[in-house]
Length: 604
Image 1 (tube, rainbow, N blue to C red):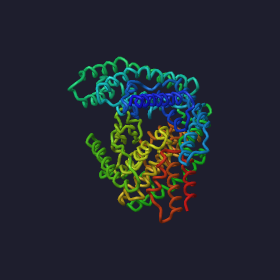
Image 2: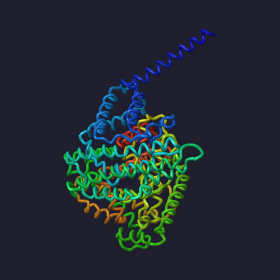
Image 3: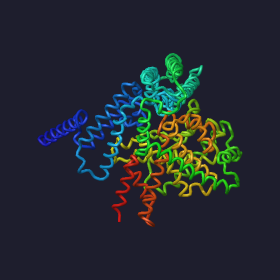
Image 4: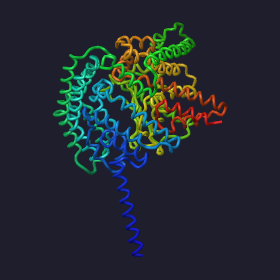
């Protein structure tokens, strides 16, 4: 028996040493297999990114929490380091023999290669973005992250929150070095962007730190912790208040002072054409977001065509509702002013809107389950966009759930002006942001355990946004709207303004339209409220190319569905189609389309 136990012990030691050796080899050298390489680059990308680790909560479930005290490095040096890393990863990826890969493995390989190859080709444009902007700039992402991502379930989390408060000045300082470097390269945001940010910073710096979201949010989270054991909560609140007043406000004031200096160097030119090699940069971001090879001119023409088609459909509905004129903006403006389509312009009205969104979501989940062969475990909620950032934020956005199931997916709704939120637009927005849109697709991708982890957490814009817009149409095709012409009109208006995006995005960044020209075109062609139009146009200016992904992706999904219907005829199964397009996670649309053709050609 002693000999047996001794042998088993030795075998165990050998196995442990072998496993340790494999881990060390994978970490420091070329991994032995492609699957190990996929895992390696995932961890390479996230281990130096504490904010992503907090969002995914992949280490928290293993009892590791140290990252929750830190911020991700925002320095210009790290931006170059990331670009160099992707170049190395691409070289290693291409060193593997792909001859023996299965069809599914080949798709994963091609998708990752596509992503890394494009990133490498865009290396010259590392500093072409605007890290401080009214949409997702560092100045509003810091408080948003602490409010929505950083959990405070115990006093260890509270300590981490305080540590992150202490780290805000350093993070802003890193970003400012990047802003100065960009300025030296001739990359300065338009004047209106800087004006919006300065206004936002002014609103952020409440005279009483206790009114700041960094404090009030912390207070709300602390109140949910049991007080039976642990330190006094007042200690943490006092520390947070002092940190906001003595360090965070001065750091924001330093950023504010720099921006006031920079605004003197800015101009009103909206498009990236004004930047060095601006046309090449725009072509790059268009390919990145649409995951196609469509040229700006092709996208512009497609947009004009789609605008005309959708407007024709809208006019038919308006005529059926008794509107005699063909002026869509005037008709929609009248509908938005009707009392039966408006909520009370009060806090009570805002609560009513959130309740309405939640009711629509519950109904949509019930109806959607018949159209999909499986359902994600992650839950989804509806919340209000934090008031301090509403002015520059879009009408809504979605935040994905954590991988451990601790934090649900969230559909954030902008409630800045209730006169801009008619009841006939609620359904299609819910379908887009939650179910069967973003939440269903992203949560499904996260739970694809057979797919490489690096691709489960990768979001190709045209796939993700195209799916969400396709989801609005899916709801129409499968009668989620209950024959409600007003909600269908809201759906068409939502699709119309995505088609208009193709026109104005390429207009601004390729055809040199001014901000005012783009606002005028969108206003005349969509009938959206003035504040919404302005916020949208200003979004495209700081996020070039991204707005084109929605309609390009939607068109691709609809074409794929039509191809499947033509191939299978009466045997068409919407569940099987959805399993195919969602079953491998987010992919470049070029690759998804090729895979669909291959799959259909293999079927008799």
